[in-house]
Image (cartoon, rainbow, N blue to C red; front, side, top):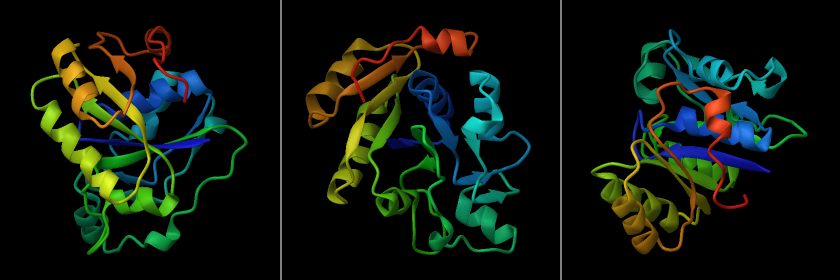
Length: 201
């Protein structure tokens, strides 16, 4: 079992959501493209989950600049080749974290959404709980729907908002809420394990 964690935007909480999913599924973690090496997502997930190194797989591309992957790759003098992406081999479930949102470019003509389609895996969309999330989330769902990408569910992140949740449940074409991760002062394995999944994945 594997899921591709994508988001409605950069900084929406994909890394926290990926950590939450790893802990509840005892899953491996893979970040295909890391842009920016001073603070990497894999290091953040390792710190949050406190899981052993065996649960983590190396990135296919590690780019030096914290920019959109296409621009970071360009500045590193390379081009991202979609053929280089191969799913890691593991006997455990796998959580794959994308870079930014769905329409973030990887090279001259491919986007993160194309990578999800290439893997042919179900996606989990991470969205904010606050103002603006309805538009961003519904647009993201529509983009995946027209490409026949299965969406396993939504993870809402941030200060809880019951009316935004209700709107996404009403207008989101029956895409279920996997979990709501509230604002946490300390993001740890213990605090994330207290947040129970709302559906069985």
